[in-house]
Length: 165
Image (cartoon, rainbow, N blue to C red; front, side, top):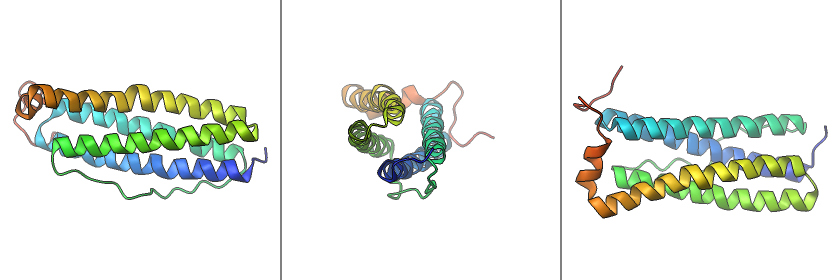
């Protein structure tokens, strides 16, 4: 099915953002694991898998519309140096994705591509209700209980730091 070139371009722009988010979550997950924050590692690894799934949806839709997926992450990931910075960087990515998704949804509506719009609406729900909401909660917890208490809660039983094999 020959798709609208503007929609294919929008999808490729979203794809670049999803790939960047995936890479950022991947790096952050491994950092958490290395530091012994098993709970953060597990959650952020899950987020990385979600971003990979979003990228897959976008690639499949671009191919269906007879476009060529542009699989170049953009912009570069922003790797944090500590847990609060990592969480803030990840939240900034999610806010940017939300804004881009809303614009793309509106454009798909205007161009009459309702199937793509519905797919992007599902991605928006996942991004707003799961990813961004969880990150906001973590930053709020750090503010309320203090960083040391927050980090202690992120350790798994028997966690002595270092990466697991």
